[in-house]
Length: 184
Ligand SMILES: [Zn+2]
Image (cartoon, rainbow, N blue to C red; front, side, top):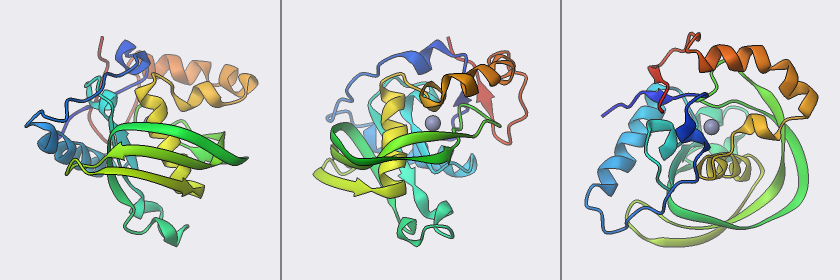
């Protein structure tokens, strides 16, 4: 099933998501649907709140960006009940976008390394440290589970300049290549 993408202006995106029930028999299907929704929307990551589910799950497939960063080829993973237990290294800036914020791209500073503990879609537990763009995507998606959007992490002056664009998105005045909705 392909879900519409819940966009900026939806209170749901500002909520802290709940732990997923690992015993839920629908979990695997949900993860599958999240990958499908991410692919038709041309995203490299998607968090459950972005499809209207306040659950601590996100999926990533960095293959799309592999032409610029070959290490991302085949970087396809589901993160269920993830915990970022440590961020380390230098902060660096990189231009980010988000399916919930169509047409907006801004430089965001993030730590170079992130250690994350999580379950995959087969309910296997992992404790791994990622770096570079992988660590960045994980931090971006993890933020969604905390109700944080990447525009919260851009310089205040830049955010001020985005105000008009953000208001338009919140009013549904956008032209995205995928189905979107405001969810209250
Ligand atoms: Zn996002």
